[in-house]
Length: 173
Image 1 (tube, helix red, strand yellow):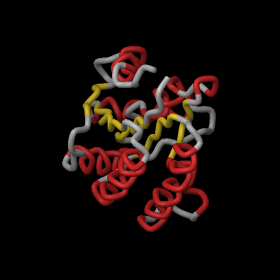
Image 2 (cartoon, helix red, strand yellow):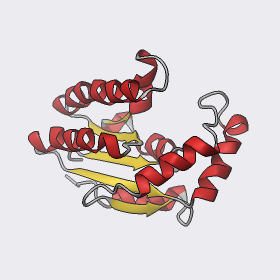
Image 3 (cartoon, one colour):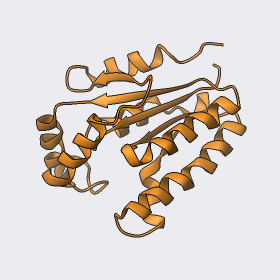
């Protein structure tokens, strides 16, 4: 399998983590890079924290690509972070690794329902973020599309269908 970079962009509860976990496969050198994992290094949920977290993930991405890994990266990448998303894509392009951004979409009401269910479903991995914050993030992402991103509706497609759509762009040997 040839190396690739898949970026999953979307609002919280849109399915990014679920899809990324299903795509990772260490035997095939496909790893999951979750931008959220860097946030706790920097403190509370401030804009500065988010920027540092995204910037901290780029050297890790570079390391993974330089060592032959394919990467599935997930993050919200709001409008203020689109330049960082461009940098992420550029890291792959510098190495001639195909990169594709997938915009995961879902109606706001579905996202709000999924977010409310997180307490019982995620077993402490992530707490619900609340209707107001989720609505703001949803609107922000909806109004700041990333050029050439492929949209996947995670309400009308099962996880398996989403994975099939993504796997179609993964290069063969």
